[in-house]
Length: 294
Ligand code: UTP
Image 1 (cartoon, rainbow, N blue to C red):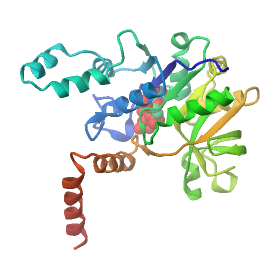
Image 2 (image 1 turned 90 degrees about the horizontal axis):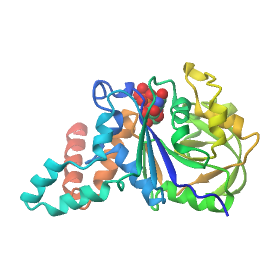
Image 3 (image 1 turned 90 degrees about the vertical axis):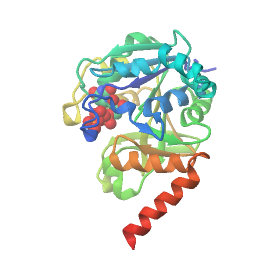
């Protein structure tokens, strides 16, 4: 029996420089895909996977994320008095239960590995999930749920992976694939941004992890990697020498909403999934495309 994963960490302290000026005063994680902020998708996915403690590693200008997961009494009163009870109920459904959220600060954006390390006291000595909120998935069940199913069998560390065009491996963290089926296979190595000829596969790490607490001890050394940042992949490369890592090639597709192209594509894909929008939205897109082409 594996130790249950109850806690999830959401690093939200990055600067989001690829989205300036939108992210000058507003956190990247509050950008919306259709009408839900990126961070809400990640929290929903974690909750679906059974997470009960939501740890946010925030930075400057991120107070609005804390507010997003709080009650807004004035708004609730107005919705109530206008009879918009369905909207009100949806807002309540989105909220974690009182006492389930914790916030800590990464005072300087020194990299993803450093952001994870900042959560060490709140996580403690237990396995935890890590979700990068700018990676949004169309997947049923959710990607973390699929990974938890693998974790229940294998324990150890688990990483969600997806196929990428072999020509594009140099933009991603890539894993080496050992024995096992798509749903749970042994990871033999990890390489950050390899040249196509050096890549051990075309399976990239897409922003969902289940990690053992020993990762914190490795991150303690604060070793700087690529770009002068404290890199999570470097710490995982050390951990894999002493602990198993399992890859889950999940059913679903990721949209990298930290990039403009991924963000715009996600908005189109998610809008076309919505019963209340799909038909009209499709006509509008076709109208634009026809004008551009014709
Ligand atoms: P990214 O590298 O995509 O985010 O980190 P970024 O640095 O904010 O974006 P750009 O490249 O400047 O546009 C992935 C996730 O890790 C968090 C980010 O907030 C994002 O959710 N992160 C990154 C931190 O919390 N701290 C860091 O030091 C770096």
